[in-house]
Image 1 (spheres, one colour):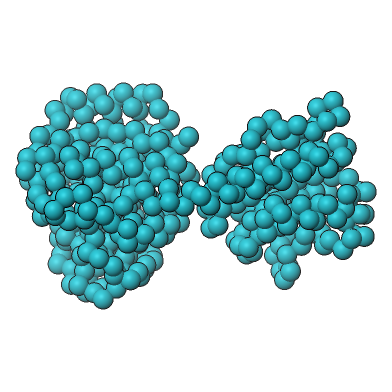
Image 2 (cartoon, rainbow, N blue to C red; image 1 turned 90 degrees about the vertical axis):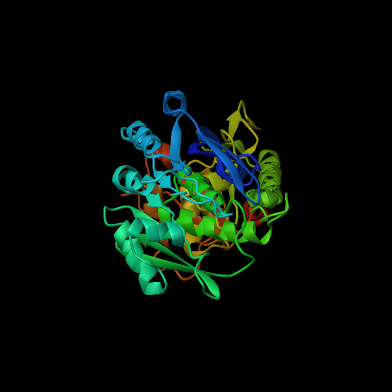
Length: 428
């Protein structure tokens, strides 16, 4: 499982801070390690008291986590003091994982969560080394030094905050607009995201969004897609807010878990197809490295959203057997083929590998399955993209004639495993 790290304050009501971060990351299948910077006595109405964690204890937590776990991405939330900012910056300086800074200064209920001069420390020490900073309107005004009233103001603030090279996601929830417009400033270009304005964003909204982004980046997803996917999740999180006290509602950080039934159905489909493969496919059709079938979740962004048989189906003494069950992240090279295909044909979410044999291709031609050959001058993803370029109708089969002998495969494409099984059984 991928690991991410959150460096933030503890929220006693459990709707923001470390508690929200852990839940949001876990909902996306990412393990969340944590470094606590402050303990707060707060609820949905007020922040009653803040006790900063001693700086040497913050340092000890960072040393413990970074010295042991393979952290793929880090987010910071409430850092509270310039001293803690410096400790975090020093600890992360020699680590190459992406850093997402949520510049927490004020709680959603309006109470301060920062010492004086925190924003100067953030600008000097953390922003120059981070991949993305995610301010709301108030935080962006402090970091940029300008008042934000219009879209032009928002874009200028992004440019000022990002002048050292960091990307900026200026959240539009606190703007006085009919819809919510967020601005992503990346490589001197803007991406605007407009969403319907739902209820007033509740307790923990900023923490949850930055945690979603961090979890996606821990999975290796780029900034733009991490932000876009996280913003979609956030809309559902706000729509499903709930009450735990007598003040602000709490943003729901586990909406992805509500979609797990889809992923379970995908796993069941792959396992069912594997049983049919083992019952029907001749052993001579199985590649020496094994046969596999992969099935992607809707809008899959990476291999972690594609299920396949773990360690493939192999030929063992003339009988086919599985080395594992269906599992997300097990598709290996098939995932790169499928992700490339889905860019232009998102309805095609399944692929299966067979050994390269001319007699199989002859049978496929006889039953009317269309095939396209790959040129293996580049990697499999590039070869797939090149083969599909200019093709109006997606072929049923991709053929690897030019690959080294042990890497030659016939790959059957389909909408789902059932579609692939239909094509497979037509040639058996």
